Amino acid sequence: MTPAINLLKKKGIKFDVLSYDHEPNQKQFGLEAVEKLNLPAAQVFKTLVVEDNTQNLFVAVVPVSQQLNLKMLAKFAGVKKIEMAPQQAVEKSTGYILGGVSPLGQKKQLKTYIHTSAKSFESIYVSAGKRGLEIALNPKDLMTLTRGQYVNF
Image 1 (cartoon, rainbow, N blue to C red):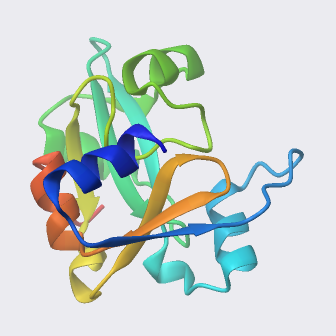
Image 2: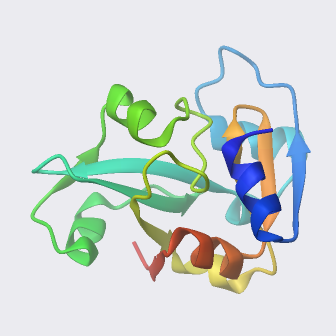
């Protein structure tokens, strides 16, 4: 079990867990999940941790088929500049390793921004907190648990 799965169970949220064999040399973690689980790329979301110019961390949940627009996210977050957070900061704050960062069950609850396209699906797929493990859940439940905000970045 991962902290993300434990949180969903504790809250009584309906979800499914999907697993696949992660290839150690694979660096496109979200696309690997799409390919190995035969899922639509628009429904599989990657969890990215970013930081502003004062080292405040934020979470962006974005379809794996898209790139995060850092300038747009900075605008929504009301900060001057945002960039990808360093690996050490990500792992320390979330408790997860890169490629296995879940938006759920993180050590620290970070401000979370979820791409608006998530609203158009009955369920979306996010990391369960481990490479090779995905969670399918309703985006409304993800929004509630993360206290997130829908944005179009």
